[in-house]
Image (cartoon, rainbow, N blue to C red; front, side, top):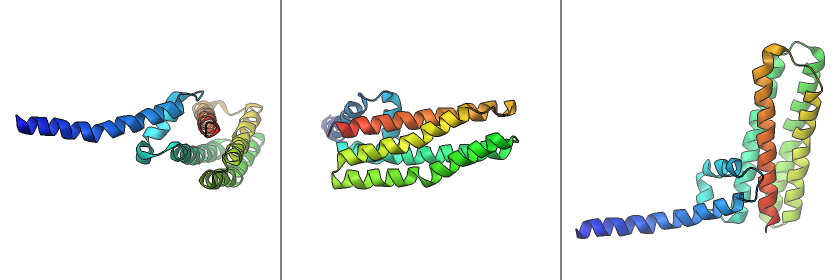
Length: 176
């Protein structure tokens, strides 16, 4: 009986801080337009459980980097299958901007976050978001090959998730 009490007490001591940290993650994500997307990002990174609010914002920026890579890979995939020159041109322009400009802005956001320049970090995230939004707008103005319907839906979905994560990061940073 004493061993059972000891094990229960040990479990309580181990689990309590994790619940407290999980509450911080929930609190930081609850103001986002898409709290579920924000929480999914944080739950995918084991460091977020022990992070402070600045660390949580850093994890969300890391998720933005990961999502950006998914979008670039989707652009590459759709471009390789698309036959229309006009559409290919738009896809390649998007891919160029997203692979050259957005990583710079996200890197600036990480640096500014570490240095405590939170307004500048949020501004960098907002500027980085402009590229996928512009890409999305340009892609909506062209007619894709119908056989690429699923791939283009996935591409637009990934851009929407990127936007949701950007919103979450900016709202978390705005609360500092």
